[in-house]
View 1 (spheres, one colour):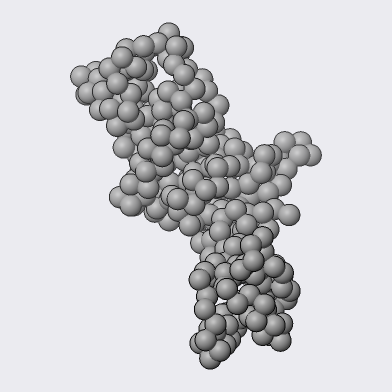
View 2 (spheres, rainbow, N blue to C red):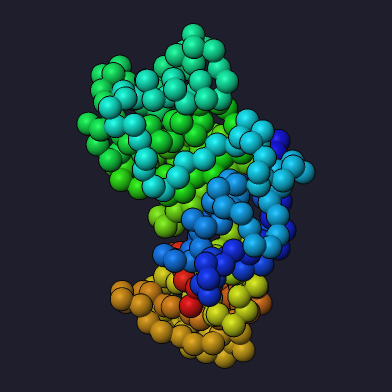
Length: 307
């Protein structure tokens, strides 16, 4: 089980900041790398994979520096956002070649290529077809395949779902979850937030090269004190309940929803609000059909952080 350590990592392109003083510790499991376009995600991944030399700081995998250390690629797999293929090679030929680069003898490399193609759902027809004739989704699958064929302990995936159809995205997300459960360390860069949320609740949020947050979504949401929670309540006694809630010091504001039984509450003290809310509902016998916190999800946390 490999641990990735990032210590004071910075990279500049002239006067432009790529990443600035980023420090983090990535433990086994799946963690999402999130940020808007231009946030520095790809630069960070290139630093983590030893493709770029940091101006300051260091990246270590299991205590070994990544930069200028080719032996690290025995335990590291990378699925880049960009595409660079030998277009005339078939999928099987390409993966066989990649396995040979990892030191596998020819017979073993051919076997590994076939097994990995099957894992990625690429059938015999696709295996024999030139990559230049692949669809975008198939190219993503073969790119993912080359990252996992040597069974690495650490996987860095840059927008691995780009161009995939919903079935392909679901299959790859499920495979990533399984790898994380097996103890591999996986960092997934993606802008498809709901799919990241299905794989993990652990995130790194990057913007303008700065690490804004690291940890579990709920923990990060708890630290965003200045942003009120929005709670949706559905009750047939909306007016009566709203009259009672107006007196709560924990209630920042109240508004009616789109339906006649919907109430939206904003609170800056959710724990105190829920405690008093439960007491008053039980004491006054007010029926409540639904109670949902609207912005404890990844989308809302991400939007708050990058504002």
